[in-house]
Image (cartoon, rainbow, N blue to C red; front, side, top):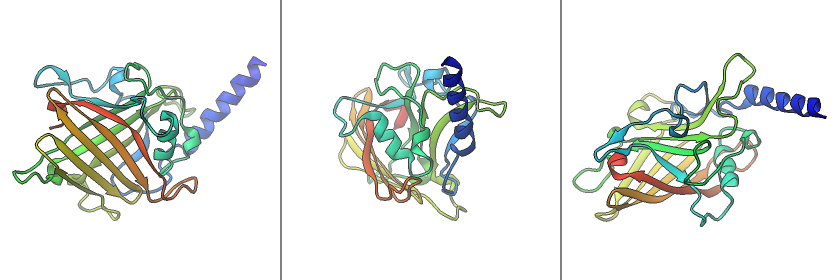
Length: 228
């Protein structure tokens, strides 16, 4: 019985190794599952930096108990725009999770009129599931599933992504990233030390025929000095 379970898991990891990469080419917006743990999440001990007041410059997209769909389901819907959503491992949406979840890093710059300066703005979403760090069957390990959006590096892309946004008040903003896979909306409210908000998405294409899939990926929390 145990041997059968081990073989089943090995087969699943082998399939994951073959097809968990980008299903669709999204120019250089970099929607993909990375190999290795060199870009580890904060939960895995990597990319830990501090900003202004000593807070971590990395934030999280998490389940605040008010999401319209279960957290893992929302992540599956989100990643279906570039990979098979069935290849997502388990993932914990708790803000206190130390092993799996979604990390958010980035920097948004707004001009004096409150408009986003796209060439000086960027963000990265790193989805850390239970496959992170496991053997990929090719002598390496599985890394994070990531969306790395930096318009300053998209100038020559065939499927050029755009980053637009606006400060809607002195304490609120909305940023929209759009590429050939879909759009991602990041809404935030500045509450002193932290920015709280939400991240939602609309898929333009899908590996599982979920074109037009919309949803809320999760609630957002990041140190104000880490994002602004």
